[in-house]
Amino acid sequence: MSPRPNLNKSYQQLVIEGRIQNDAAQQKLLSLLQEVLDNLLAPQKKSFFKKVKPVGKAKSLYIYGNVGRGKSMLMDLFFAGVPEHHKHIKKRRVHFHAFMQEVHSRIHKLRQEKADDPVAVLASEIAKETQLLCFDELQATDVADATLLYRLFEGLFVCGVCVVSTSNRPPAALYTGGVQAERFIEFIRLIEEKMTVAALSSPDDYRYQQGRNQMEYYCYPLGYDADDFVAKTLKKLGVKENYHTETLIVHGRQIAFKAYNKKIGYFTFNELCAEMLGAADYLALARRLDVVIITNIPKLKLEQRNEAKRFVTLIDTLYEHKVRLICTAEVTVEEVYEEGDGAFEFKRTVSRLVEMQSENYGKTINCHPEHSEGSLQKIT
Ligand SMILES: Nc1ncnc2c1ncn2[C@@H]1O[C@H](COP(=O)(O)OP(=O)(O)O)[C@@H](O)[C@H]1O
Ligand SMILES: [Mg+2]
Image 1 (cartoon, rainbow, N blue to C red):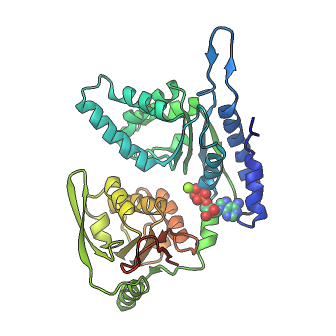
Image 2: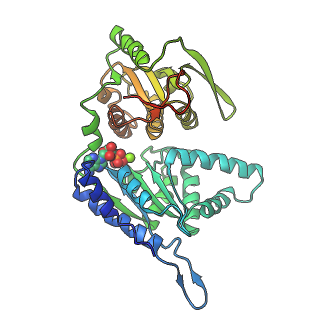
Image 3: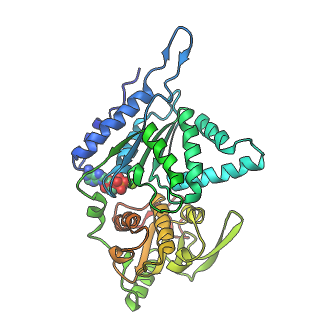
C-alpha cells in the first residue's frame, strides 16, 4: 500500500525551499485538512453483510479568514495530496463562480429535458462524477441563488460528497445583503451542521507583502502619463499594429471588444463594469485572453455598488485564470472603493490587484503573432 500523503511534510518542504514562512495558524489548519484527507483515503471496510464505502465519511471542511492568509495555498496543498487516480475518489477543484455557472446551465438543460427535480438530479449526477469537491471563495451574494444553494448542497451531502471550501467570511456572515436574508439562513445552517468550520487567522496578508513594492502594471492618476503608460506597455508586449475587433459569443449574446495580437484585450472600465456583463462573460474573456488592459478605473462612489460588484467578479475571474492585468486608474488601488455596499468584499479585490502586480503572478503567454505555436513567452 502506498504511504498516506503527509501534508505537513509538503508544507515543510515549501518552507525549506524558502517559498513560504512557517505560520502556526496555517499549520493548525493543515492538521484539519490532514484529517479530512485521512478519512477520505481510509481503506474500504468490509462488513460481513455489506461493503461499507468510505466515500462520504469524511467530514466536509469550511475554512474562512481574511484575504492573503493562505487559504487557497493550503487548499492547493491539500488537493495535491489527494492521489490523482485513487480508486474511489474523483477530485475536483473549482472556483465557486465557475461552478455556479456550470450549475445554472446544467439545471437549464435538465429543465429542458423535463427532469422531475432538476436540482436533486444534478446533485446526484455531480456526486457520481466527483467525491471530493474543493471550492475556492465560496460566496453567497445573489439572493436568487439562496434556495438553489441550499438544495444543491443538501443533495451533495446526502450523496456523500466531501466538500472543502474557503471563504472570506464565517458562514453566519456569508450573506449580508439584507433582502430576503432568511432564505440564506437554511443554507448557512446546513453548512454549520455538515461541515467543520475553521478560521485561519494568520497575522499577515502575504499577498500584500509580495506585490506592494512593484505596482508596475497599475498606473494612476489618469491623464497623459497614463495614456503613455498604456502605449509603452503595448509596445513591450510586442504589439505593432492597430487593434482589431474580436467577438465573443456568450449564451448567444455577442460581446465585441478591441484586441491586439489576438490575446490582448483592451477595455475601458465602463465597458466591462458599467454594462450588463456578468460572471459568464468575464469567464469567457479570461479563457480567451492572456492580457487584459482596463483603462479609466474611476474612484467609485457610494452608489456605484453594481460597478464595484462586477469589478470584484471580473478581478476574481482574471486572477483565477492568471490573466495579466494592466490598469489605469484615477486613484490608488486602495482608494477605488472604500465605502458602500460590498466594500468589505472589495478588500480582497484590492489585495488581489496588488498580488497581480508581482513578478510571480501571470501565466506563460504567447502574445507575439510572429511566434509559432509553442514558443511561449513569459510577460514580466
Ligand atoms: N506562510 C506563508 N509565507 C509566505 N507566503 C505565503 C504564506 N502563505 C501564503 N503565502 C502566499 O501569499 C499569497 C496569498 O495566499 P493565498 O493562499 O492566495 O491567500 P488567501 O486565499 O487566503 O487570500 C500567495 O501568493 C501565497 O503563496
Ligand atoms: Mg484565496
